[in-house]
Amino acid sequence: MVELSEDTSVTIPLRNLIALVVATAVAVLGYSELNSRLTTLEHGQSIQDMTIRENAAFVREWPLGERGALPDDLIQNANIAALERRQDDFEEYRDRINELQIEINKVNGHSETQAQKIESLFDLWNSQLAERVAN
Image (cartoon, rainbow, N blue to C red; front, side, top):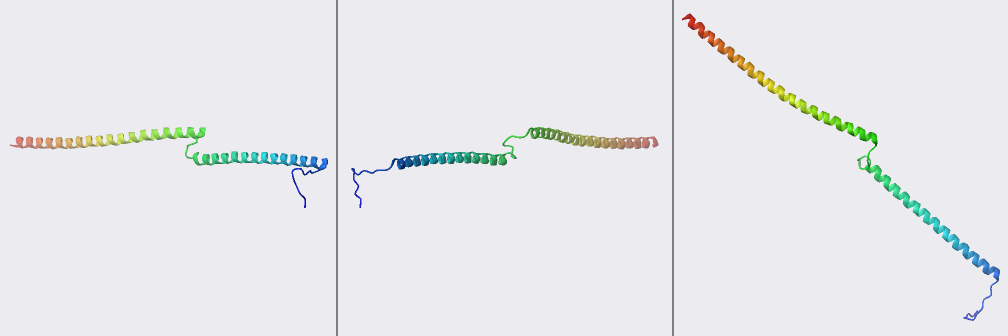
């Protein structure tokens, strides 16, 4: 059995000491290179995750119009809005024409009724005149 104390001396050849120092330096350099590579890969992965999340949000929000529209879409939407306004105007004109037709029919009905009344009055007048002349 070997006894070790503070005064125990260890002898190591210089060649072995240099080999230990070089091996330690290579290990440290390898560790730092591996750590740098992992950091780079993790950073790339986080950027890729952000891009994927942004793309998923874009795909979800674009059809809803929350992410803007293409210039052609804007022109098309403006044209559709103009056509809808024209359709509303035509519907108002149609309603007004229907009201006017109703008024015209009322006037025509009153005119026909008045013409019938006047004709009846003329018939009565003529019959009374004919009776007076006959008497």
